[in-house]
Amino acid sequence: MEKKNKSVKILPLPMHEAILIIDFGSQYTQLIARRVRELNVYCEIHPYNHLPDNIDKFQGVIFSGGPSSVRDNDCPSINTADFRGKLPVLGICYGAQLMAFQAGGNVAPSEIREYGRAHLSVNGTKSELWNTLSDNSQVWMSHADTITTVPEEFEVIAQTESVKVAAFKIKNEDTYGVQFHPEVVHTEQGKVVLGNFLFGVCNCTGDWTPGSFIQETIENLQSQLGNDKVILGLSGGVDSGVAAMLLHKAIGKNLHCIFIDNGLLRKNEFQQVLDAYQHMGLQITGVNASGSFYEALEGITDPEQKRKAIGRVFIEEFDKQAHEIENVKWLAQGTIYPDVIESVSVKGPSATIKSHHNVGGLPEKMKLKVVEPLKTLFKDEVRRMGAEMGMDPSLLNRHPFPGPGLGIRILGDITPSKVKIIQEVDDIYISSLIKHDLYDKIWQAGSILLSVRSVGVMGDERTYENVVSLRAVTSTDGMTADWYPLPYDFLRQVSNDIINRVSGVNRVVYDISSKPPATIEWE
Image (cartoon, rainbow, N blue to C red; front, side, top):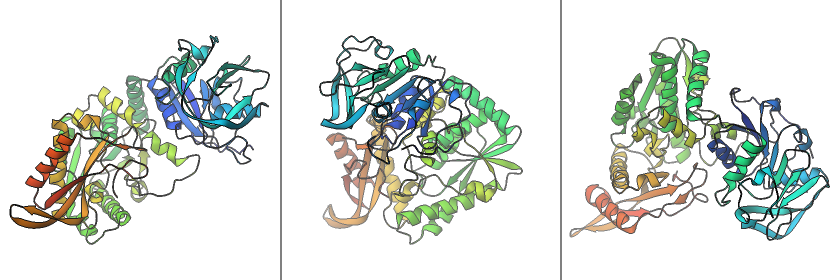
C-alpha cells in the first residue's frame, strides 16, 4: 500500500513554528491550512506522495481527509508510524481511519452513511483536545467508511448518535484522530479543537502574524536581491500590488513596475491604477498598448485562442519595456500559495478547463531569475499584509479581475466598440454596487456582453440590440462560488440605468449559476 515519497523543497521560513499538513486529496485540505493560519500558526501542505525530508522542522502534523477508502488496494497511503510518537499527530476523517487501520483496527462501510451535521458527545472525557469544548456541540461529518473497532492502545474519547468512534487518542502518545471535520464552519467549535491541538498539544505560541511576515520577508528580499534591479508587471490586482509594496520596502528604487493597458481594462482603470500606485511611491511606467492587442484579437472568437493572443502580446510588450531598463536580473511575480500547492497536487495537474489568467513564459524569454514574495500566502492573508502596510483600500479590496480583462467578458470577437459598451455597462453596475453598500458583500462581480442580440422597443421604434448579463458571486477562494441574491429593487434600478444610458443595449439578464457546474467567468 505504501507509495514511494518524492522529496520537495520546503518553503524557506525556518524562523517560525510550523505544522505539516499531509494531503490525502480532501476538498477541505486548503481550508485546514487557512484555519491553522488564522490561529497565527504557520503551516505547509504537502501531498502524501511528495513528503519533505526534514520533518524535524515541524511542531506537529495533521493528516487530512480524502475521498478514498483505506480498504482499497490503491488508496493514498503513508506509514503513519513514521510520525506517531515523534511529533504530535491529528488525523482528520480519512487520516484517522488510516492510522486505526494500519494499527490493526477495523474500518468498514458505514451502516448509516454520515454526511452533514451531528452532535459530538465527549461524556466528560478529559482530553487536551476537548479543553473548553461544550458537550454535544455540532460537528460536520462527511464519510462513507467508519472505524468500527480500535486497537487496544487506542482510547475512544468521543461518539456521535451513529458513530461509536468519533474520536480517539493513542495511549502514551500525542496522537489523536477525529472522524469529523473541525476545519469547516459547520463544526461550531472546530477552531477550539484545532487551537487545542496547536497550543495545548503541539505547544505552539502563535508567532505567524502579518507584522512578523512583512519584516522577515523584507529582510529575506534584501538578502536575496542585494543591489540587483527587479521588474514587476502590475495588473491593478491585489497580489501584484502587495508584492510590489513588499519589494519597494525592501529595495526601493531598484524595483521597476510596468503597467500595460491592453485595451481591455475597466473604464478609466488605467489612469486610476497609475495614480494610486504613484501616490504610494512606486516607480511605475504605464504603457498604452491597446492597439497591438486589438490587432492580435481581430476575428478571434474562441476563448482559449483569445487568452493565448492576449498572453502573447503581453509578453511582447512587457519584454519591449523591460529592455528599456538596463541590467535587470529579476522578474517579480505575485504567485500565491494555492498556485504552489496546485503544482504538486495529490492528483497531478488538473484537466484544463481554461488557461490560468497569469501569463507564463516571461522568465524563459527574458532569461531572468524569479522572485515571488507572496508564495507562502493565501489570498485573504495577502489582503491582511496589504492592510498592515497601509495599502490603498480601493486597491486592496478590489474584486478579482481576470488577467485577459474584458476580453473574456465579451463573447465572440472583440472590437473597440464592443469594449466601449461593456466598459460603460460595468461602470454603472460596479458603481451601483458600491453606492448601495453591496460591493464588499460580494467576492466578484462583473458584466458580460453576450454574442446575441434581441428585439426591443424604445419610444415608438423597434430596436435590435445587445444583451448583457450581470454576474455576482460569493466565495472564499474562487474554487467554488455561489450566486449572490441581489435585491430585486437594485436589479430593477441598475437594469433601467444600463438600458437608458448605454447605447446599443436593450436587455439585461442576471446570472444565477453557481460554481460548479458553471465557472465564475463565462469564458
